[in-house]
Length: 255
Image 1 (cartoon, rainbow, N blue to C red):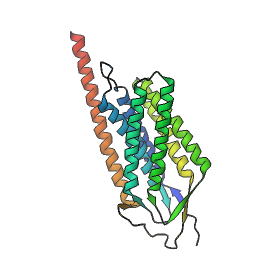
Image 2 (image 1 turned 90 degrees about the horizontal axis):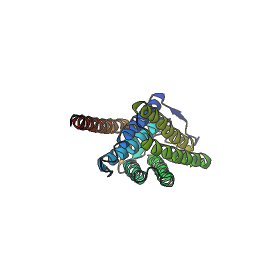
Image 3 (image 1 turned 90 degrees about the vertical axis):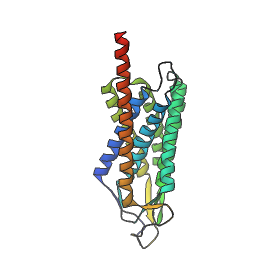
Image 4 (image 1 turned 45 degrees about the horizontal axis):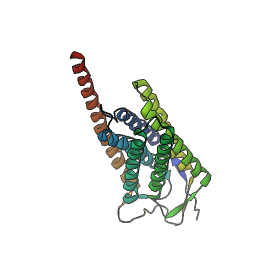
């Protein structure tokens, strides 16, 4: 029996994972520009939008679409417990890190701390999500690449927070979203490269069964449908806020 799991990648899903990372980053950067109200108070609805857009769409959805792009010659399934716990971790940690940085966006020390916490939460989400991938076997880790993925995550998270509070114009926001998408994907695929899958059964096509397990071929539509719905809702919310802000400016100009 050959324990090595042969792997390949679906280029279409890899590209889709990058597109979701960019889309989530763009919505998050847009909402980040509205984190503070007229009196300087935090707009908690936009804090939540940043958390869902960056943590939920840009990181979590990108991660699982990226994992679905992985083709293996063994049966596999996903545990929904780890899958959705990783979603809560991504959204909550992103929102919390943004709040930490937003209170003093001009403080380098606070930015670095928030970036470190956000980066490590992305690492936790990534490896928790990978733990949710079930095969009849185990994963052998290249700790050097694991460490590199952690470094990429922290640097990318710190850059994301800096961009969130220093990008104003639409062209720069689009460019920053692409940069963030590249950074998120770099962390993810470095983490994936750190994993060597080992099969320990002769029944290579057997799909692991358990409470809350979902077969790998059933997950793509669930992730994609959830992500598209979240992205549309968040985008409509930001569009509505932009219209309202423009209307307020027009009224002030008439006074």
